[in-house]
Length: 346
Image (cartoon, rainbow, N blue to C red; front, side):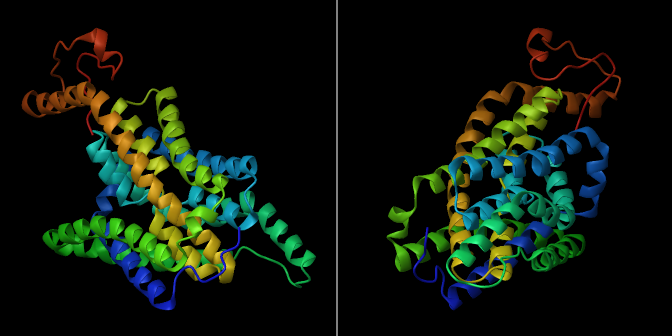
């Protein structure tokens, strides 16, 4: 797949960079040091989330790239998306899906920091072969040199993106009211970014939608759907509570698109960057649609176990941790086991 002209102009790239900073600042405004401490209170759920996030997703992305025969640049872009942490969008969807928002936020906070180490390693494991393919293709066309994945640039990009996150956390500590405003602004800006990119591409390269092979559409849709499915299955097999399953599922499938845009713009150049950015745009568009549908399903079928969890929390606050209520065990076993004198809360 060849993109004949620049996907975004210099002005559009500058506007996109500003919006990314706003989103990451808002993400930081939703976090606090307590979120990292909160992660330690549920190590099993966090571990399963990390396995899904950094174990399953890169493997799924690599498998899809191989199965669909994606060109090397697009394969690297797909693997990059699969290796990224979740973002605030997953926290929002976890809330509407009646999932554990506390777990979702804890995973977002911890995985964003962990990505500084895991992302270069995972790219080396899964994307190095595609980089060699690009080098061979360049040699066949008479170009000298070697295509190398810029690991240092990627780490620097992550650090630059995480800096506004840290500033947002400082704002939350000093002014929770303004932090809430920044968080809401970031959520809105996330949708604006997707619309902005789609409009820019439509105006400059409207025919690109028709020139894109079906394999790229399948890849950009399937990576999110696969993440939802395998994240939920991992949490189910390890017998986590349903609200944890929903949170891990959404946290696994919804990757941090703004970080992907930032890394691509700061680490790659030319037609390679345009191709990678195009796949990122498609992923970000379809993930909003698919996540909305999945959330509606989770919200409908999660009503019963969520109400049980909420009732237990209220009972514990009113009567102490030893309080036991005779809930309907035949349905409770399908949601979350509870034993006399042992109540589980967020």
